[in-house]
Length: 146
Image (cartoon, rainbow, N blue to C red; front, side):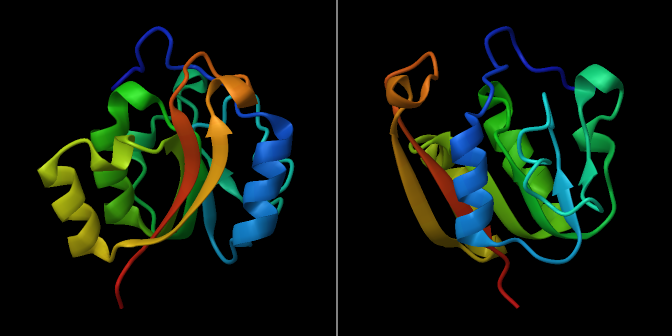
């Protein structure tokens, strides 16, 4: 089990979750890999699967194929989180500080081997949306190449 570090639990504002789902319109089999309080699940179909380490459902043990994963993942696990997502999903939609997907050359390379960034939807600084940081925050849609 890979537990997030203290400070990794940053809840997504309701309006951001609603906007992400409305804008990107995920379809098919969907996974919310770290549901927290369930803000994304409010706007996703009722058949959406979920994981939550605090409830004993470890995302890193999830091995079913899904069309979409959508979440605000723990930032200390960004690299590992993205790499596991590339194994199970065709579309990844994560709310993260905009620098996180560019953390290392290896992660950038893995992202482009998977398919690449299709779109980034910016939401402002972390502080402007209630996160405990000043970094710019955005929703990254990364899509598998077919």
